[in-house]
Length: 79
Image (tube, rainbow, N blue to C red; front, side, top):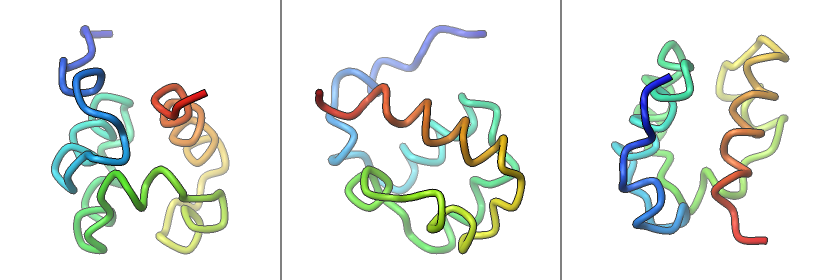
């Protein structure tokens, strides 16, 4: 996979814009779900708190996709 864009580390997840969350999803191979995140205006502050149920409600129906999104996201949450 390609190197992570620098903003992923330069800016805390909770400060990401809606477009940065979209870029994160594309980088994670979850581009199919990016439009729903943009449509619902999910920024980093909201994304940081999202649960499996939130992702399901957003239309991410595949369990493996929800697990990958949450696992990849959690790498950017503070310890």
